View 1: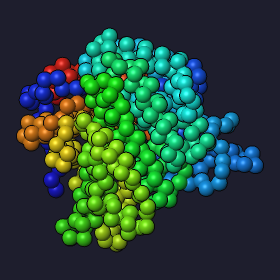
View 2: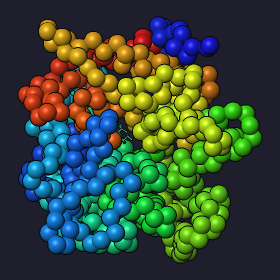
View 3: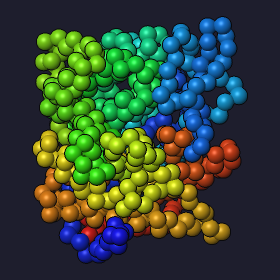
View 4: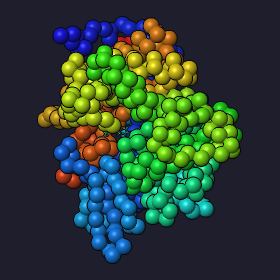
Length: 502
Ligand code: BG6
């Protein structure tokens, strides 16, 4: 069998383009900790308990008669009126996370030592507007990000800021069901305007919503809504697509140097066989990945989605004004996460038991999997880059990619993560081919969790992605000390050689 791991290369490759943005990525809720510090409010992530590979994360709430309950995060559906929040006796991993709040200087110095040109992070909406609907922002929250941006700029590291990365204020959920309600668009616009004006000149790259296409799989993290109803998902999607288009326009008005991108979770799908039914089903599956990006990049709803809504009696009711807004608010570049590929079968006898970050599909026998069952596919990244570039003809940025693995600290405090180096190296080789052999305009690479943070899907600490190890463990032990892994020195060399020495 052809083994994708028998790939040669990595030494003396052609350099990446001049000004290529090498860096790393994190999200506030998974990294910062300080969940209640300096006036910060509670976000949807703060109400999620720690899970594991076998134990699902739960979301906690109080019922009308005062009972405290918890329900599974993925596919969360709560019809009754409840109050979401954090309660005694639960283990919430975001509350400490890996404590960037108190370590930002030390951590940014480590990013600088690796030679980062850019760093993708998110602003936690609840630091700026604790409940989401206030008229005035929280000055302490604004000051925190001033300090972070100043520290980054001191080392010439460009911040790339995700405006909403699973950090919807729970205040909005408890008030009017967050993104189900049109009024949340107004609150979001106030937030965008506040940060756009405050950080003008410091931040040039903005991403509106993290992985908006994940709304199809669960509405809690991205929207602060506990629903699985298709009409609700369509309404939430419409509200966020309009908000994203408005954000693009506002940020351009504030500073015409601003570059505003979207962000999608991109999984490349393959048909299980060449049976036309598999191929057709696969095409439909790919459209699930494309839908939000189609609207954000082209400025209108694609025909396949309109027909799907029509078939399923889903009302869209877009006004002329909203259509105009979508048209005017198209993004300047496309950013995406890529971890794995998926395989699709139309045959009910074929078992779909392969897990992944977003998707359960058929196991691809040509690929290996991570310890968490995500199928590793570097060639899929080259395919993804080509698919997206051909379809949209806009610059692309990879803002998440990497290997979640268990790392072992040796007695001398070294960490030999050659598996991570291998994963990243094979993916970078494919990026290089996409640029030099296929002509894709790729402008940056931000590997995920460049320093260890908690996992979004499981809430675990020991699923680590970082170049830097952080000594916090799932049982609550650890002193937060930062240690350089072997991949730290390797990535430093990659950046220093502009991708020619892997
Ligand atoms: C992406 C999210 O889907 O996957 C991140 O944007 C997340 O927030 C990343 O952390 C990796 O997933 P996990 O579950 O391994 O943390």
